[in-house]
Amino acid sequence: MDTMSIRAAAGRSASSIADARDAARAFLKALGRPGIAPGAADTLVLVVSELVTNALRHGGGTFTLHLTAHPETIEVAVDDTSPQKPRTRAPDLRGTGGGFGWPMINRLARATAVTPLAAGGKTVSAVLAR
Image 1 (cartoon, rainbow, N blue to C red):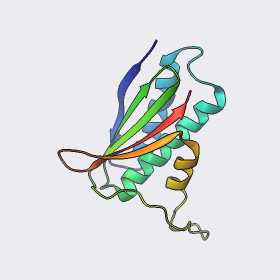
Image 2: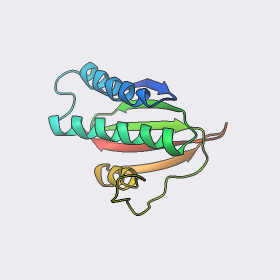
Image 3: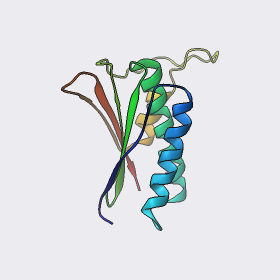
Image 4: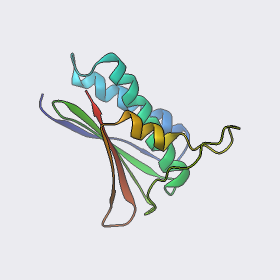
């Protein structure tokens, strides 16, 4: 299979984060063997979780997750309603304010991008190795 793309999940609540992770695992299962290396699968689910969490916390409270598999990569894209780009900030080491997700996504991904949506909001995407 050269390319496979789905709209994997959408939501507006904290339980939607678990739904998005489940959708990512189902997407990987649909790719078949060898769809993705074992460590890469865990990384993909982590990136999905972080991007969706960021959309819910900082991106207007709703999201749509899109997953696309290419021969060498998988793209995770999350649409939200805020035009504000993610920003790197000092992590809160006391555990109350976050600040870990966006830097982690940038370290794990081959590339990240933020694209404005014509109807408002943005898409935040991360390209991961397969």
